[in-house]
Amino acid sequence: MKPAISPRMSQPMIDMFRSRSLRGRPLQGGCHIGNKRAGRLGLPYGSHKAGRTSVGLSHGYLRVRSPRCVRGCRSGKPSHSSRLPAFGVWKSALHSRDARVCLLRGGAGPCDPPAMRTAFIGAYGYGNLGDELCLIEAMQEFPPGEPPSGGAFAFTQNPAWTNRCVPGLAGTFATLEEMLALDPQRVVYGGGGIGGRADFEEYLPWMAAALDRGIPVHVHNIGIARIAGAGMEYGPGEGWPHPLLGRVLENLASFTVRDHRSVDMVAEWGVPVVPGVTRYPERAIAAEGDLAEAILPRGRKLLGISIINTNQMARCLEADGGTVRTLLARFPDHAVVPICSTLHVDSDEEDDGSGFHRFAGMFLGDREIVAPQLTERGFWGSEVTPRRLKGIIARLDTLVSQRKHNCIHGLGAGVPTIGLSPMEDDSVRRVFVTLANQLPAGSACIGLEEHPG
Image 1 (cartoon, rainbow, N blue to C red):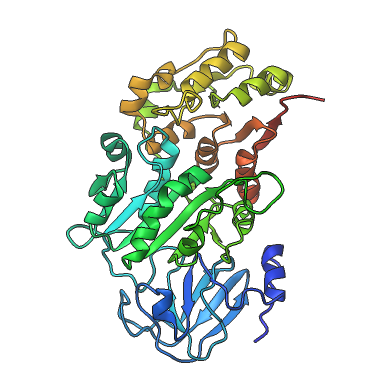
Image 2 (image 1 turned 60 degrees about the vertical axis):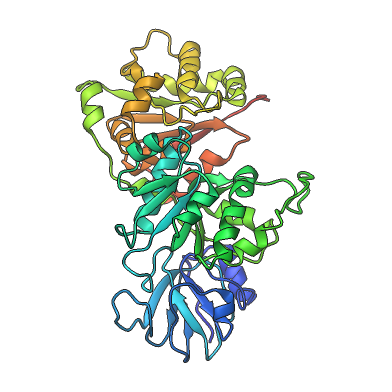
């Protein structure tokens, strides 16, 4: 079979297909493909009857055709064809005549039962609404159903706060032992910027413990940071890759990341997996407008400002303040709304309220600031949720934000959004590059120099 190369495919995918390097490798973000060794490879939900399986490439998607599913399908009907994202992780040879296939479709798949008790793990309960936003999206992508046969259970450091932000949780847990005691039918490591070394090292033992018990594990919609010690020249990074990394990643039920830069970061680890790309699906989460209606004025032009309280950003604002003043001069008649998505429980730098006040002292002068209570920890902690924050952002005429999940809210709500961040930090730029063909008019990304030349 010689699949056509679609012009919509990314160049890395084209190169991989032409080199035939995908053959015999995991395909993810949509499917598991195994052969007679499928049981050992851990196909979790069901299999397709032995027979000829054909795989083609069309319009940037892989097309997998196989005989009818013989067990475990939700509908009980034959499933002959599935359209899968072209980036993915392959579990074994595509061209096997006796291939056994379980299609996951980038999340819950047609072989999943309608209710699966699901444990969601990630950085929840720490005071970052972006993480809870990703939990909402993960629960939509992996619908758990209702107890007793189903139900969504989440790790959190603050059960009351996470339950308020994420309606529909059946319960929470705080330790690996508590998670395993729930007897979950699958585990989802889901969402947020949890692709750094500290987060992986925290949760790899959790994922390995689940896999050892035969529980399918999904890594979903995460942002990957560059980790020193991945065999590249940028740092020693002793102890990385983690000894569990390869075993966990090569046995996942699905693996997706937010952007193609994260795919590159995974490639540096030397593990033979290629994750699927989600492109920030949390941007589609619906807003709630009740809080915005209560605290924002009508008939005023509104400029939202979101700044993280990092020392690096403070140095950039000081050194490259002229760029900021030029930007603000474009909005002379706008009232300013502080946009805070993170008031972290144990990090002064991850405090958007303090970041806003520092920015205001440097640049806002006598501009009118509306809804200043959004910077206050008590009001914010009791009133603001991911959907309510998006409702506030949706009322803005323009948003200027260093916080990427506020950028995602703005772009998802159709608000002109200007990313503003240190030039050396690519996390905000990744959002604008990934969503470049969907940016509202007037959107842009501006980098600030810490040492302007």
